[in-house]
Length: 59
Image 1: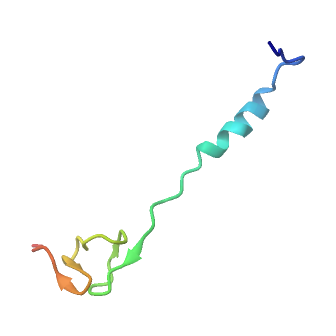
Image 2: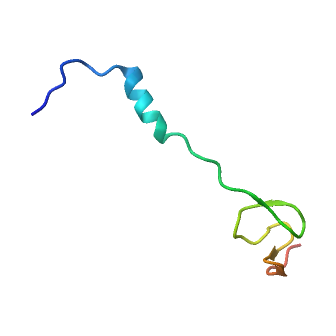
């Protein structure tokens, strides 16, 4: 079994693991009907439109 000759420094371990902690924020797009920020390929929660048609009733 392979055994390391030296202890791995804490900084090197944390540097290697830090790449997995970086999360990208979810993509955002603008609603063409009302201009509100929404998730792409989803119904706009502000006006209820999706792909040019009203899909849900919003109060």
